[in-house]
Image 1 (cartoon, rainbow, N blue to C red):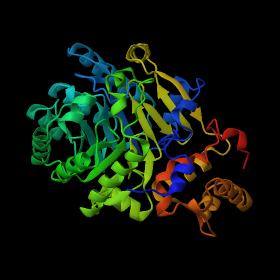
Image 2 (cartoon, rainbow, N blue to C red):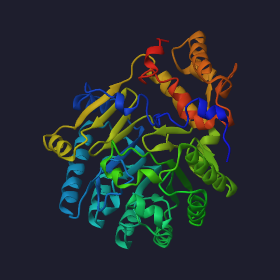
Image 3 (spheres, one colour):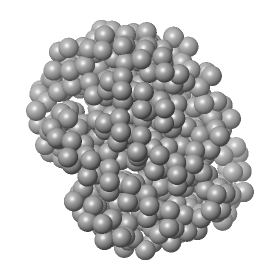
Image 4 (tube, rainbow, N blue to C red):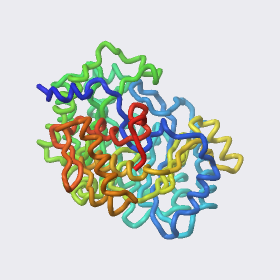
Length: 451
């Protein structure tokens, strides 16, 4: 497969660029945000409004080598039981600050492996959450499910608690690749779990699959994608594997000399992408696909697609509260992150305060630039009229922002009276183009000026 030579010239194959699930990105958070800020921001949530809630469970029975998430292995249930008790105490603390009538538009359990909780722990945690923040009538309760760590009793508990969307991690179905990344999970097992989820009336199924893995080739990723399509997931996240063994020690177990080249990675993505499109999926942003009737595809069409720490979402709630160790919350005022270490998080909660230890308060151009980056990541287009309508910015300042990016990327972007657009052929550069609007990026900050 041949690629536009401008992709290489503009650094696609050698640049390391954020995924922009937030702006500014987490490495730019500071230590000046603490528990009192978090509590105060919760108290400013309007009564009778909707929020999203993320619950982080940082435990796994096994540590997959490819994963760079904050997780810890456990063969015992004791630390899991203790952690759930801490979560319940954190939820009780949340109740003391949360205004009346707040409900959940989205509830997501992630990790780690939330499905290593026992059925009783699952039911108890869900009951505690919904007693404080009920799920809205059209709300969504999703859970990340490891097919290797689930059984009928736990599926029954989740379904009875209201789970109506499940997310299955696939990564790849090829046994050679699975062994190389420390995640052995057969197609038969995954298919069986998907069938058991749907048999319990769970309406929607998500799946994650990776490209850029060791030993991955065009035929191998084609085979994995076609197997995945037989499960008929409603949404698929096609993530690029980030091999950073100098940052994630467990990735040192993966053979670096078997990794595909950057050019091969792009070909792997295109191969998978075409298979999803041929099967009728709608392409959503840079790495998601959804059935036309799925809420994410509808949000894309309606112009309401958004981006948060889990990636793309059709949730438009302005507040996302993260509970559990290392969780990040987003408020209209800024970001707040809990203590990353489980012990530090638990100590704070037991002392009767939130464990917030870093974050960021929006100032200056933050919300304007955040919206520009989000619009590029979601729609590949930024509306000039929207920026002028919704933000305190002049037409000249907007034009200056657009032209600064246009000078860097030339005909790979388009500036018009309507706004700023990334054409189809330049979409592989989306994150790099978004970085042109990032005032915090170390390489760009020196070129940034106040709007």
